[in-house]
Length: 99
Image (cartoon, rainbow, N blue to C red; front, side, top):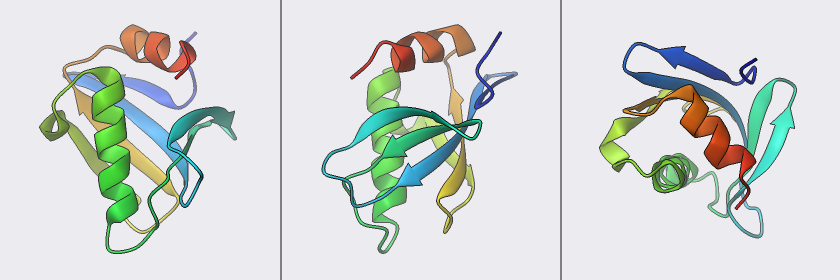
């Protein structure tokens, strides 16, 4: 059964994430209230945390940044991202695989 924060869409996946900015380092924390919790080292100022989130997800999933889009939650800690060119099984493997 897929994780509640992960949804397959026609050309990729959609992730529901909970972001904790100003952490000591950027990393996946795990599941929290049905969302993927991610700690970001970037501060929530002038879109820095959003940019850091997109870059982190793209790097971890091995896709170009242009394939990762923030679709909801621009100014919220709860965000939704769409990642093109990957499937749900690959995303779960990367995220559960650790750092």
